[in-house]
Length: 264
Image 1 (cartoon, helix red, strand yellow):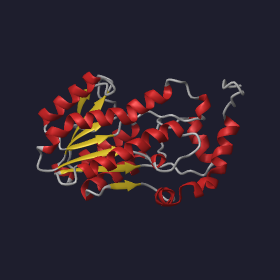
Image 2 (cartoon, rainbow, N blue to C red):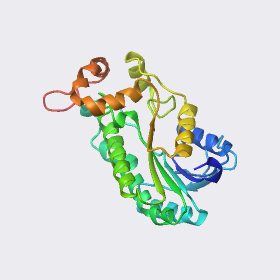
Image 3 (cartoon, rainbow, N blue to C red):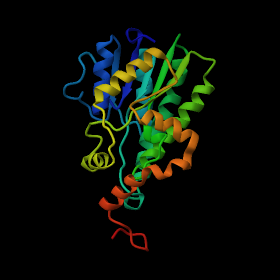
Image 4 (tube, one colour):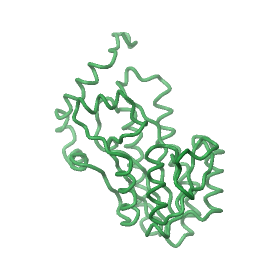
């Protein structure tokens, strides 16, 4: 679909990647409706972007967004909302996995379910899930976050096949680490120690635009991450030894649990 024909619902529109996406899409001629938990549009939001306030981990929030999207005639949905999680599993609060999975995986699943009837009525529609290279390559320190994105990738793949004979295209965008406030100082230190590149958000936004206009099933960003995604799918455990420096950095910077399971 050409950007000029797109009426886009963009979740996570307050984030660094979300704002870059909104700017890029509106500049290319798309109409964009942003979704966020705050009532006010973000400072510096793309000119002309509409705004919906909703908490997508609640049933009411999902219902409100679905109703507004249908009334507005949305034909492109971009699931960019998410929360981070970094650190050894032993040091994650017990509530953290539930929060991450509900936000990064369950909320997009439920919103897609609510939007699907009206998307199927469109001559052409697209749903883009913003996943992550970490959803295809498991890295030490990202077990919880990576699991949520791996689930999102699996959901999108199955749904793409389920809807293959309809006018709704299901797509996945797989960024690598991005230089926004989503990644805190600890992640930046980890990336420096492991020679992991970080892209500016505009790189991700441009990749999104190309993905939408190509209607390809997926697009992963950056080298060697794109190669790693493919190799990890083929070789799996044979690549485990490639991540020694990632594991060492994580252990050197994280409190270690005692034998009873509490951090020391």
